[in-house]
Image (cartoon, rainbow, N blue to C red; front, side, top):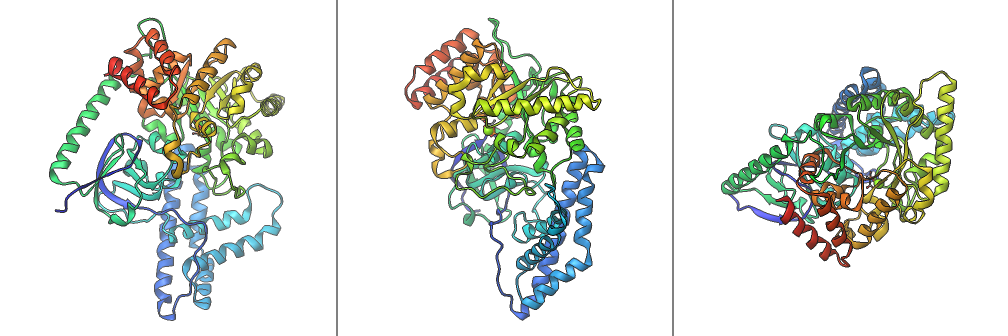
Length: 578
Ligand code: PEP
Ligand code: MG
C-alpha cells in the first residue's frame, strides 16, 4: 500500500473524518461551447439524457427537503419542474439543436433556456418571479448537471468526504448531510458563508490545500483532521487505528460536555451567559437539542430562501417561521431579515455583478430597495410570532437612517396586519447586527432606536481589517483576535450595557470556549454559536468565574499584538478549561 502523506491546510471546522473522497467541481460562470464531430453526436445525446436524469434526481431531493420543511403543498413546484423535464417537446427541441448545429449538450441546453426566456418575457409584467424562469429553471439544473456541479454517482456506502477547488455554499450542500463525512478544498475563506455552513453541520473541514485535486482519485481514502487542519491521503493501517482512537477520545469528551448541556451557563460567583444557537435550515433541529439552548440567536433566513426554487410566498414563510418558533417555544427566536449579496446569491434573483460585492448590494441595502420583499418577510414573521418570543434582526446596518427607514416599514406592516384583522404581538424587539465600523462610532445614537444588538464578527473583522472573508489570498490576514477587533467588541458591550440593551456576539469567533468567556468578561449578555459548539461552551462557563472572565478581558485588552492575545487566551485555557 502507498505510504500516507500528511498535507497541512487551514482548519475551518473541527472533528475527525475518514472515508472515500468524492470530488465536486463548482460550475464556471460561462457556459462552454464547442463543436461536436458527426460521429460523436449520439454519445453527446446520451450525455444530455444522463444529465436530465441527474437533474430530475436533484429536484426530487429538494422536493423531499421542502416537503419536510413546510409540507407537500410547497414542495409541489419541484414536481412541476420534474414534469417540465419530461416534456418530450423540449427534449426534441434540444436534441434537434444539438444535431443541426453539431454543438455540445451545454450549448444546446443554454440555447433552449435563452429561447424560453426571450419568447416568454414580453408576456410578463413586473412580477419579481417570472413565468419564464419557472420554465427555464429545470433546464438550468440540467446545465449544472452537465457542467458537473454535482456528480451524481457517489461511491461506497454513500458516505463521502467532498473535495472541491473552492469551498462554496453549493459544495457544502451538494449532498445530504447524513452522507457528508468531511470537506476539503484547495481554497476558501475560513469565515466565508460556506465555512459557516460546514461548522453548522458539525462537519470536519479543511481548506488552504493548493494543488490538492490533481492528487486525488475518486473514491481514494482520506483522513481529515478538521481541528488541526490536516489531511492524510491513503492512510495506512496504523494511522487508521490511531485516528479511530483519537476520534473515540473526542467523542468521549463531547459526551461529557453533553451530559449537562441542559444546565444553564452560570459561574459560581453569579455570572451568566446566555448560550444560543445559529441555524440555517429547519434540518438543524435534527442535530441539536432545543432544550439545551437558550434560544435561537440568529436564524439566517436567506438559507431557507436558497433551498427553494423561487421566493417563498408569505404563507410559505409563515409556515417555516412558525415551525422554528414552535420548536423553540417558549425560548426566543431571532429571525434575521434576508441577508443576500456577497457570496450568498439566490439562483432565481438576479443581482448585479459587482467589482466589490462585500462593499456592494447586500443585506439591508437590498431589503430597503426591494421593500416588498422586506414587507412580505416581516408580515410572515409577525404572523408567525403570535404567542411566541420573536425578535427581528437587521443585517449590514451602516446608519441610523437605515434603521429609521426599516422601523417605519416594520410599523407600517404591523399596522396593516392589525387593520386586516390579524393578531400581532404588541412588542416584538427589533435589533441590529454590528458588522460595519460606522455602527461602532454611532452606537450611542443608534441604541435608543433599537432593542438589542448582535455583533456579526465574521463581517466586522472583514470590514475592520479590510480583509475579504471569502478571499483565500488574504485569509492569513483575517484575524478575529486582532486587538482592534477586541477593542471594538469591548466598546459594543460597554456602550450597550450602559444603555441597558442586551448585547450578543453571533459571529463564529464565539464558538471557541475561551473566547466566549472573554466576551462574557467584556459584558456581553449572550453568544450565539453553531449547535455543535454549545455543550462545550456551557461546560467551560460553568468551570470559570465572572471575576476570572473579567480579568481575562482586562488582560486581553491590554495586549497590542495578536500573538499576545493568543498567549493570554492559551494560558487561560490551560489554567481554567483543561
Ligand atoms: C457575521 O457576519 O458574523 C454573521 C453572523 O453573519 P453572516 O456570517 O451570516 O454574514
Ligand atoms: Mg454577516
